[in-house]
Each structure stands twice: as C-alpha cells, then as structure tokens.
Image (cartoon, rainbow, N blue to C red; front, side, top):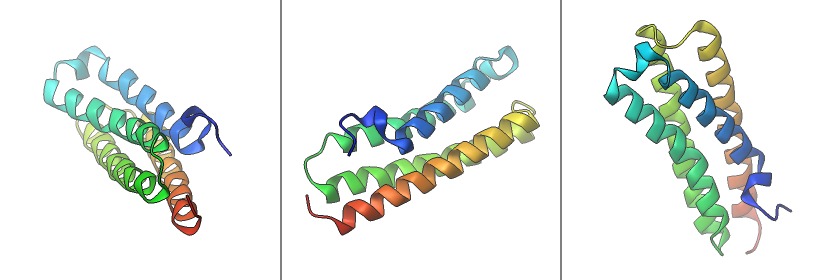
Length: 121
C-alpha cells in the first residue's frame, strides 16, 4: 500500500509525461505558440495533480473520481501530442514516447480506479 502519492505508478507515469510536455513546449519554435503551450502544460499538469489530490481524499469513491479526471487529462495530452506532431512541434520519437506514457498512465489509473471501487475505504 502506498504511503505517498509519489509511490503510485499512475502518478509516476503522469509525472514523466508532464516532464516530456514541458521539454517540448520549452523549444523556441513551440514556445511562440502560447495557446498550444498553455493548453499542453495545463493538461499534463492536471493528470499528475489530480492523482495527487485524489490520493489525499479519505474515501475510495472520491479518489476514483479524481482518477477519472486524470484519465481525461491524459487523453487530452495524447490529442495535443498528435496536434503538435502535425504542426511539427513534436518529433516522431517524442510522439511515440508521449503516446506510450499516456497509454500506460491511463492503464495504471484505470487499474487503480477499479481497485478503489472494489474495496472498502
């Protein structure tokens, strides 16, 4: 059982994805597109932040709700990576890495979500 949210695989993967997004939007050619950068950073931060906030809740159903929000944010990051790739902001390698991280993070969130709904508080 995790004692800190940083021990959760779902958070670790979301944090790694967040760091990748921050690296991408820091590139000079990308940084000029303020709307894309803000949206990408917000979505990437939202996933990890919602997992952390949910971990601090006392009820499993409440934590599960935060995980659903995190999964939506991870889905949004995936879409933004595709959009960034089409705009030539995101390389093939970054797209592959980000897509893999988002997919793994969503899977970890879904597994934790299901566990929380099956177990008592």
